Length: 502
Ligand code: NAD
Image (cartoon, rainbow, N blue to C red; front, side, top):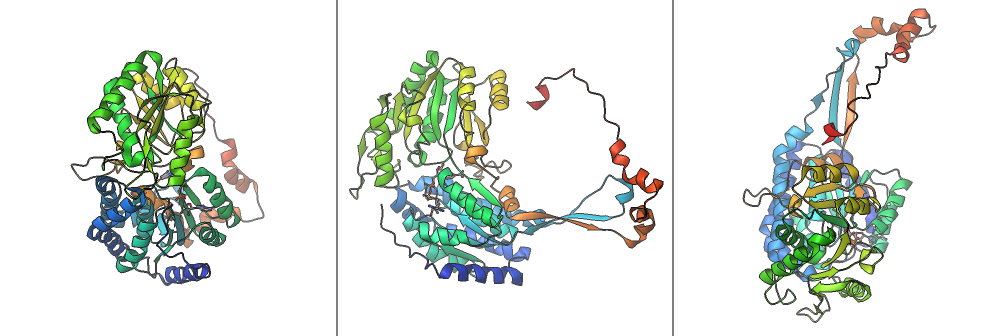
């Protein structure tokens, strides 16, 4: 593992830091929209003015190609920070709520979206920039003070951000904690007004238990095995290219990476041939030597992935080689496709989180759906089909955080030409084992805000409310128990299909 070059935060500093942020929050520093907008723009400026240094740091940690850092990390943070700044007045505007009950019509009823307080963001290493700065941006927009715990597994990025953040953002409101298990354990002993955790489900259980002690609300952005279902009638060449693209980004170390493919036997040979063709076209000399292909984050993860390849009972039909990087660390692994993988195979034990793609044969799409249903709910379910019946079946008979038809990964990267790097109108998040909570854009703002209902009942309404005071009489009983006598409509069991759901 790379040596850590960002200083760990001394344990005794952590409670002090939280107290300082609480004082700042209590002072109202982060409440004015103008302050939030300025800080969001500063976040964008920090990323823009230091994009090369950020790309360099991420390359040191992950050998991630610069184009991936710009397109999937730095670019989206800039775009989303500016978008949030632009929309902030709209998002924070109190909403006048119209009530339907006639005798409440004259009450003053509103909804406020207010900051939760001092929040904790715990970030992972695989997309270290966006997965730390996107939630930070959401919390800034919401008007919170933030402690950002960066991953110790991406130390060069952690070191750089620790230096940059105070140069651009107000340190009275936004601070970084660096370190590993002892530091994060200390952080989790404290009470926070929200915890936003991105990472592995096993650690999420520790975070959840710590949050439960203080009844802290939580967002869990986790991973798991995101399957790909291939309808044999779909364009197999296109499907293969698009699946391989999703597997190739960051050498497969991304939570939305297509983890495995479920495909009927009739379509399998053509699909595998198309994977091999795409690979040869993109990497004529193999990807091990190419700067366009990332490395595994450290030798420990590499050994885990190599172990999976050693233990699989499947047959490697593409790639399979490993190697070391320019510093002599064993962290390189080819884009690898393994055919003939069974349900009990080593490659199906957990999330692969690397450049290995197992292919599992199924009878048909129905069997693929049953396969997915029998397992924990994935973060993303990918399916390739042009058939509406298949789309409907996949939608209504499976559960996943996100459902993507006919491509992979692009749901996060949007229209590069218009420089809108996300489907801004759609939220991102998991369900069940892949987590809960929704992020990006307005959803990130919502996570760190709470909706406060506001009612002002005018004194002049008193005569109409006097029946609530004892002693109760027959009139009071008639008014106050009216709902218990409501008419319940008769059931109409015709039209009991699912048409309206698709
Ligand atoms: P990681 O090892 O960097 O851990 C994430 C954070 O957890 C770090 O800040 C780390 O310090 C902290 N941590 C480590 N041990 C801890 C402990 N005992 N108690 C509390 N915190 C602790 O990252 P990772 O977990 O290897 O990340 C990979 C996982 O994250 C994969 O499963 C991936 O799918 C998932 N992921 C999900 C998303 C998403 O948005 N849904 C994004 C990226 C990654």
